[in-house]
Amino acid sequence: MPIFTPLQISKLVELAKRGRVAPLYIFLGPEDIVKEKAKEIYQVLREKDSLLEVYDLKEKEDRNNFYKIGVFQEGLFGIRKTYLILGGENILPEKGEEIVKILTKFNGLFSWIIIAEKMEESHPLYRYALEKGVIIPSFYKKAEDFLEVELINTLKNSKKIMDKSSANLFISLVGEDFKYFKNELEKLILYTEDREIITEEDIWQVVVPLEGSAIYLLGDLFFNYGPERVYRFTLHLLDMGISPPQIIGFWYRFFKRMQILREVLKKYPELEEEKFYANFSKRWLEILENPVEDLPRVIAELKPYALFNLKKHLKRISNLDNIFEELLQADLAIKREFKNPQKVFFEFYFKVFQEIAKK
Image (tube, rainbow, N blue to C red; front, side):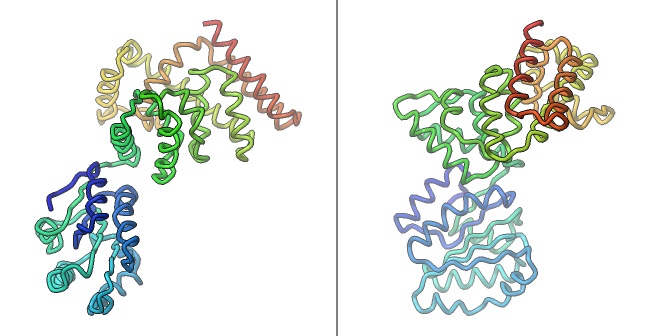
């Protein structure tokens, strides 16, 4: 079998379901990303009554046990067995030779799924997989990149369309949990069954934000939809158990980033004037890669797309000092005056909205 891309996993899954199971699958790339793809394969094998044995070679005990494997008795009695190996980059070439001999001698009785950060092309397992197995290299550096490709592929297969803004919103809501990502995307596709285009409104109606990422959506939600929508979402956060001080703390960081960005844009006026994201992103990355630049971390760590949006929001505010004052009053009302947080946030959002309206 040839080398497959991560987008072709569905083809491998279909082949496995029809009984065309490779003796060796090697998934190359960051473990937290590629192991989610590997699951789709070994779940099919488990459904075929294959015994599953897992070894994490990054763990000393598992590594010691792994190197003691030699006889593979279950396979000799006709019981198909699947070995799932994490940390496959730790498999020594000698052990690879041993595995290859077993796979060659007892063809059809074993399947190996190896997840490795990297593997030399001269490694016995790599050479065997090129000839008789499957290699699935993944070059994603971050989980967000992986999810973006998965989103594009799933939408294409479902004959759906989602613009860039909606795609970023969806990924922001579901975080980096691949299982959660798949579940929420399936819900969204079913909800829009009779329509081709999936809108941001559809996403807000259907997708339940993952708790860890929900709070970071407040800023974009406020500037894109207004105070009423962000207030309803804040009530949702409070129901999720996120405390009022946490929400206040987020707003402080959000507007502080705006304040710092305003200073950065004064230094780079071409960024402030740029209206096209592609040009903005290219210029921003050039600035980041310049070794003599020393940008504040809270700005440098933002993705270009998030920064581009923040720049658009910033244009709607003339006086950030007034907003910081309102935020301070809201904080005091909650912590010292023990006012109802729901009422405090309601008033805060409309005061900020009035401040924006002055622009």
